[in-house]
Amino acid sequence: MAKKLTRQSQINEIIKCGKDPVYFMNTYLKIQHPIRGLIKFNTFSFQDDCVKEFNQHRFNIILKSRQLGLSTLAAAYSVWQSIFYKEKNILIIATKLAVAQNFIRKVKTYIKSMPGWLLVPTITANNKQQVEFSNGSQIKAVPTSEDAGRSEALTLLIVDEAAFVRNFDELWMGLYPTLSTGGRAIILSTPNGVGGQYHEIYTKAERKENKFNPIKLMWDVHPERGDEWFEKETKNMSQKQVAQELLCDFASSGDTFLSNDVLENIRILTSMPIEKSGPEYNVWYWEYPIEGVNYIISADVARGDSGDYSTFHVINNKDKTVAVEFRGKIPPDHLGSLIYDTARRFNNAQVCPENNAYGYSVLSKIADLGYKNIFFNSEKEKYRYLYGEGNNIGKAGFNTNKDSREIILANFEESLRNGRIKTKSTRLHSELKTFIWNGKKVEAMKGYNDDLVMSLAIGCWLMDSNADTYNVSQIQHADAMLKGMQVNNTQADKTVMKTFYKSKHTNVDPFVPVMLPDHKFSGNGKITKKNPLGDLSWLIGK
Picture 1 (cartoon, rainbow, N blue to C red):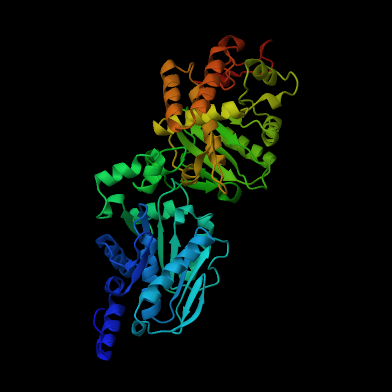
Picture 2: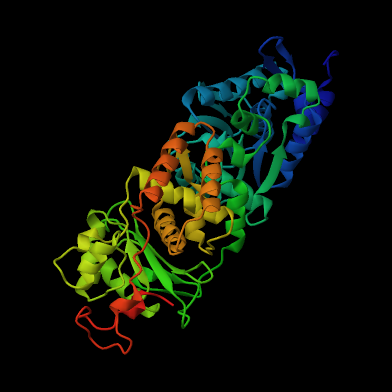
């Protein structure tokens, strides 16, 4: 201040600053500007509003545009808390060490800019990542790690650029208990696509499904930014960069397989199953068998003791809804028995697991149990199995390769987008949020799974393939969808559609179920010369 304050005036100022953080920041703090050097910290109105929110709400999550000075504001708020209040343990989690150290530099700049009489507690420890005060308060900034902050009882936790923090979901599980004694949290970030812990916390906060107070700060909250600024900034930016850096758009900022609108439509339909049974209650029912309805069962098979899950879906082929879903870790032969029992219950449903190394064990178990309605990729192999002409069960099921995987996923995306397949599963919804484009390949984010996604994608294709033909309109829709799903995947899209057209036009589509002709069966169900296994008319369908 311009004039020297009396001792009583200093005391009054200390009390006023302790009560009003915005006044404290604007009156006594200075920031390091990259061009103008050390300047007075004059907060903007949106920053003042954020500080009020920090004080009013225990948990705050901020979705922000870039360069709004929120990290600078958080550092100033940390200084205010640690100086004017005792025993404040403040921890900042940053994406990397350099960012953590930069946060502490901002803290030290604030402290140095303050008049000596205002710094009531003395500094007792001072290094590149931590500042401690004689009143028991401390400010510590650390890079992301598995054990960051786990052993501390925190007063305030600040997570900077949380959407970009590696394994933030696991980190948050460890950090949340440290706030159990009344600690507060400020989580801030620009968006980084749909899925992940930051996205989940923010979207749930918007729906008032958790304790967080959501704060959304678009590019235009800054009073010095207008249309001219926006046009200049976005001139050399990609659509994804604009969505991420300026528009606070989760869906467009990431590489998720499904758009945010489609994911939201799926979320709205989710509901708890009417029954949970089977191994560890992992078989979820939303529908019991309906007489006269044809069902199909698709499956994605894992070893049973690794990071992946074995999964299967029972699909109502009449109204295209998922009736049953399984996700668990059991040996393949046990999965075969479970699928057999489920298929029998659901009107002898057609069974189509993925035909991989572990899928063979599932198919063998189902065949050993005498089940007949198994999907084969050719009419010849289907007849061989039905008439017992050698052991050809290895030819059954869905053969996954690069081309077939891309085709069924393209079909799956279109089916979900157009509501042609309906699911109520929260487990599947969670997988879809972390199912992303990684270059030219679609796969689960690192540390996540896509087993339910692949199982239902197989089932969805099988469901659509039960029609006599795949008409021109559907092909055009799939073509347009593939071209629009990923801007940089033009060559991959061409490869997928080339494979698709080739398989259709050469009559070697490996996905069309075999429909046995009527003349192979007798009308009364008795065994005939060409039908030694008896009446198999149930294979034809209704």
